Image (cartoon, rainbow, N blue to C red; front, side, top):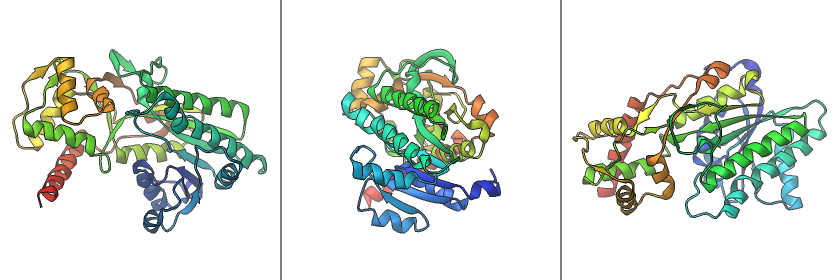
Length: 342
């Protein structure tokens, strides 16, 4: 998608800028000619800064409510047209509910407070917060439904509950402050460069012959390539139609576990597995292979998610078909295994 000249002049702040998603997004934004600021809580980011010399860096801990930290956050927000709020944790494995709120909800509240203060001194300035949410807010088991943005949310995990609370905090802040707008992106399970390890576990199970379909293998999974996550984030920021709206962000396809495993097996040059296991045995086998509770939730999930709204409002069209994504993933797996042996 081509960026219009006005959009190229936007001042953009990216929280969690040196994470996997943040790095991919920042590189794209710099390529578009946007004025990019990066917010990260780490003081030592020399290597990352060397790879992003055109981005301005702000050191700030979004989880801290100290006056000094708040002032630094206000400075980072001042003059920003778009804030991509990516900071937070991606998984709930091993975390308590209190810790999950401190990682996903509190940083969002602190960011919104600082942004409002930053805008208060700039008459007429409006900042749009683009929030990296999650389709996990719908729950993992929704067989027979096609979930769109109007579907009831049914978060089960502490991670999903914290992401939904962050959504609600954003909407409440925007309702109170006319200088703030939002776009919430409910992003599904991401794959692609930088997101390989969870999928490599499945590859290893296939290679060792330990993989079992959980049930009949016909449950539906939703995926999106990291390149299309970035495409979606840019697309909604460039469209005024996306202000104060929530969107699902997936590759728009309905994948079954069986279909994905058969495609992966073909790329690996092996016959697809034929054995099945019940839920309990399947969980035990996956755990012995190193799968986390979040990864198990993904494998057991059954939901189809619609992307009609983001296609209509933002003109978003996924660019990475699952066949290419699996081909590239298999190639990286082969390279990784060769390096380990070498």
